[in-house]
Length: 185
Image 1 (cartoon, rainbow, N blue to C red):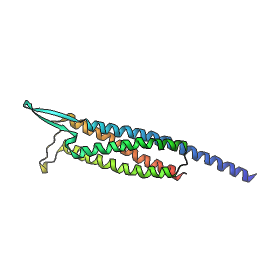
Image 2 (cartoon, one colour):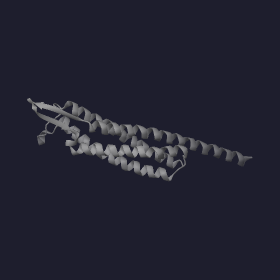
Image 3 (cartoon, rainbow, N blue to C red):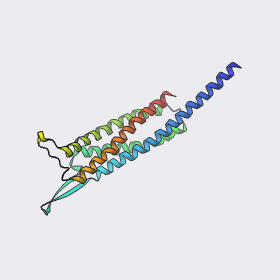
Image 4 (cartoon, rainbow, N blue to C red):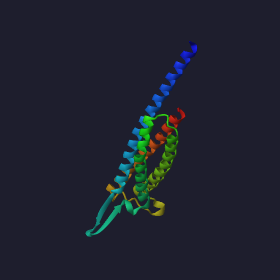
């Protein structure tokens, strides 16, 4: 009788771990979708950021566009690649909901998520440095703030950083969740 009750207790523990892993997998899917939206919105917002200013006449125009600055180009590319990766990883995340005990695919996702996190962080950090210079300038190098003239461009480029840094935080959570689910296996 005693052996039967122990085995029954172990069975309910296995079901509980399976249910927790399934819940982690559902949360993983939701975070992937939200991070995908964040990276897509950041890439679109930065990619469409431009503003033209007339100089004394309509003949001479000064334009600020994202593709004038290489750091902004890299930002758009890194967000776009991360967005595509997140879209391609959604089926694997759905697979983890169905088979919550899958281990090798979770390890693969942890590694790929970490690579994409580094890529996204480098693009967002490069763009953040340029946005900081655009807002504040640097008096020791005689770089003046351009955001007093190009307010729309600066607001749009600064706003695009929010989605990217939010997606970075979500990618960190994805790595932690996948690690927890893998350790509970």
